[in-house]
Each structure stands twice: as C-alpha cells, then as structure tokens.
Length: 82
Image (cartoon, rainbow, N blue to C red; front, side, top):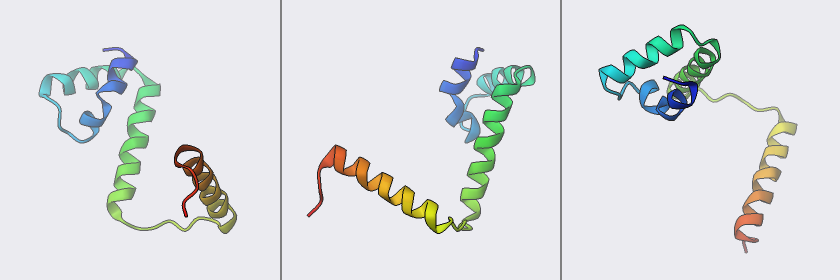
C-alpha cells in the first residue's frame, strides 16, 4: 500500500469501518512509514478531542481573524447576505 492509497482510505480506517484485509494493509504500511503514522495519530487525537466535547477557548484576536476570514470567503462564494 502506498501513502496515497492509505490517505484515500484513511477515514474508514480511523473509524474502524474497513474490512480486515485493508486494516492489515494499513498496519503493515504504518509500521514502516513515520509520516503516515503522524497523520493517523493526529486524526485520532482530533477525533478523541471532538468526541470529548470540551470546548477549547480561542484567543479573541484569533477568533476575530477567523470570523473575518470565513465571512470574506462566504461573500466571495455566495455574495453578501442581506
């Protein structure tokens, strides 16, 4: 299994929804590929944090920049909202 093939099937693997054969291929690939191990570990950690449901407060400056950025992208794609 290549890194590209692994990334394509990653969601199913992380959610434990793939067939055993694919899981074995993932395990073999991950055993020898540090970059893919990091990607899988980060995704698992993100899912665990999300499932825990504990909000993480954003710094006010970051939140303002994020809101402005999202608003600008929305307006570029859909126009101004009345």
